[in-house]
Amino acid sequence: MATIVIVEDQADNLKLFTALLTLKGHHVVGLPDGTGLLEALRRERPALVLLDIQLPGRDGFSLLEDLKSAEGDQPWKVVALTAYAMPGDREKTLAAGFDGYISKPIDVRSFSDEIARYLG
Image (cartoon, rainbow, N blue to C red):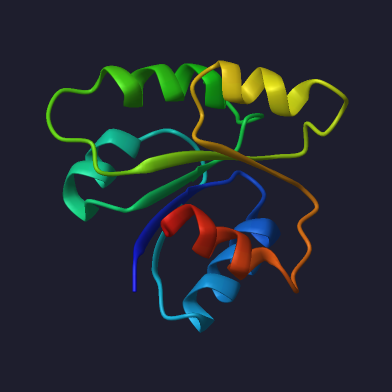
């Protein structure tokens, strides 16, 4: 299956996302903030990055800018995994350059299938 990096500051959410994806056979690397994200991407070479928007320190939008400007081959897709779920938030994240958008709270029954579509 795929390697997925998740940047999520809420420990319970990170545990839930990791458990759901691990059950599907994915290798998951979790980070509580953006510290070390570029190093993790170089080391892990993930197919997908799930990036929270509201993070301590730097937010997901500024981290996305780093990811998009990183040198070298970038095989990963970056999907916003965010509690920002007001009208227009999906469009704002996609316009910023995210490859996809998943709102929290997630639907645990369909989360793995939604991730599979981004990996497909």
